[in-house]
Length: 260
Ligand SMILES: CC(C)(COP(=O)(O)OP(=O)(O)OC[C@H]1O[C@@H](n2cnc3c(N)ncnc32)[C@H](O)[C@@H]1OP(=O)(O)O)[C@@H](O)C(=O)NCCC(=O)NCCS
Image (cartoon, rainbow, N blue to C red):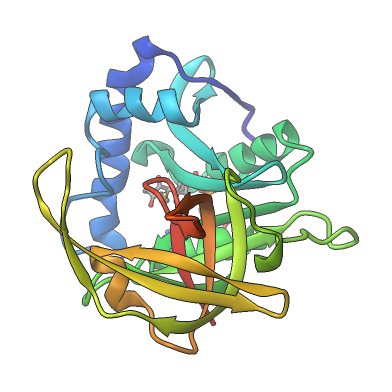
């Protein structure tokens, strides 16, 4: 077995991580992708710096050389989202990413739930994550022609991850993972963004479970992703109060998942 280490990435690593990420994701063209490309900022050093600021970003080292990167975001005290993992193509299929995941899990012993998304077409990542014990729980829809498989892994099945219930949601809560059924969806309203001046569409849906219901705010492309009676999960959402009514927001770090 190859001996690797994972260490917190630093500012000075951004350039190298961006070029490794570019080579890694461009190689997806060989496993179902339609040409070179990758997720937002995958080839950009400044995006790597941004990810380092907002998430836990690690470099993967083999003999003290960086061969890959991995970063995770928080979905609450006991939940983390694997945002990205990439390995330089010359080092693929040597078990490095599998070992990096094991090291990551050791670093977060309190975390019971790990989730992540991967494009439906990516046969390589699907094999990789399923081999590590991830199972599909839903879909992340990214527009009319794209959807991602949403995976989860529960680390210790003897103490299953307890999700917050809709009836327990309170103003000010953040990093929330909650599931429910879409009960109603209002007609879209047009608003103009105060910060960018852009036209936006917004709807208020109602999300309910056996303990209660709450307004779920959906913006732009999120609106067409759900319909009444869908079972959905919001990951990394937050609650605020608008005109005296609690509402659940998805936010830029959050996810809207249609459950199977
Ligand atoms: C996904 C990735 C991180 C895996 O890294 P790695 O170090 O090669 O991973 P491992 O060696 O631990 O495991 C790779 C597994 O994928 C399998 N695999 C490789 N190519 C495959 C393909 N075309 N179809 C199916 N499985 C494939 C390997 O056989 C191996 O499984 P095995 O152990 O059962 O044989 C790497 O391929 C990568 O950087 N890809 C580009 C970036 C990406 O897609 N990242 C994930 C999304 S964020």
